[in-house]
Length: 455
Image 1 (tube, helix red, strand yellow):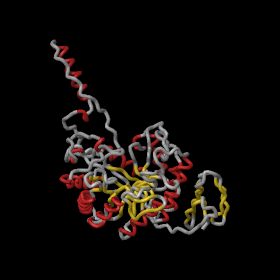
Image 2: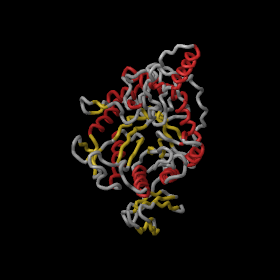
Image 3: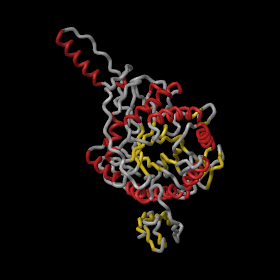
Image 4: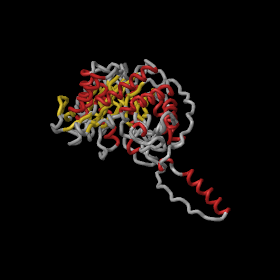
């Protein structure tokens, strides 16, 4: 999320000094220092710049069906990394147009409405303009809420409280903000409501407050549909957590773990009480909360297929969106080859189970930082392996493509195929030779190979 910047203690007042020239000098210095202080350390409302004209955004490019794959821009992205990095990242994302998602507050975007009815869309404009220049099909996540909607002061942004939900009395105001965003960016036709049920956990009942979230969702849903009936809206964007232990156990389980029943209850409540939905949104990791990845990093990926199939069945086959998906703990000391192989097999699980959309949470970092799983080198824009993987899957395994059954002579080699192309992944830490689709493949440890099927 956007870090709180320029947070300084209030400077002590200047002592009164007699003498005309000295007094004038000190007054000037004092005024200049006051003007240069961070507004976030002041108790008064910040000065909000007048609303600037909305940017002119190119319409999304035509594609051969729904792209299925995409990326979420997070705290550090090419729009702020400098000209060279921006050009390189734009090329990586635009060579095969894919979905690009941005939150309205946090994760690279400043507070859009720091004072009620007064907007500051400069950072959000910058992100949307970059997405448009990179030929993205734009998606907006309606999260998070200005401080004054959740007990804070107007004009102040406490980023430590960005995960708080707006108070119910301000749900209508949040819907107005969503409408303002939708009208400002008319090329955006897909909106996800909120993020991971942030602020909707009830400590008293030790469960999710699905009723409160659904009230927010319905309020936003009605408001956006009134703007444009073609706008597509989805929820509940709740994390699908799993454990190895039987605590809060549900029927949704496998060798990868057991999904928390409280999460399924929240989804069920939303499905029964939502005003409507064009797709269902969830997110989650392949690993468990209490035992890490079980039984191994590749078998654990079956969770993605199991959850997707469950959601399609329970929702009446609503399109399933994975807003975030994770395959490794943050402490995983994996080579980039191993990490990318696991990500590739995860995407195979999404495609084979009929996931409509899977958005990759891009973990970009500051310039010069090590960046496992990133799409480009921070500050430079040089391509990293995950960028090629996203482009390949977007080109060959977009929504609506017909998959063809192709097997491997060695179960350690995974394969996903359509009529014209297939992708083969060695899940072993050793070299493997396998027969796939009538051809012999000799694959290095964790190697990914794309193969033209000539049809």
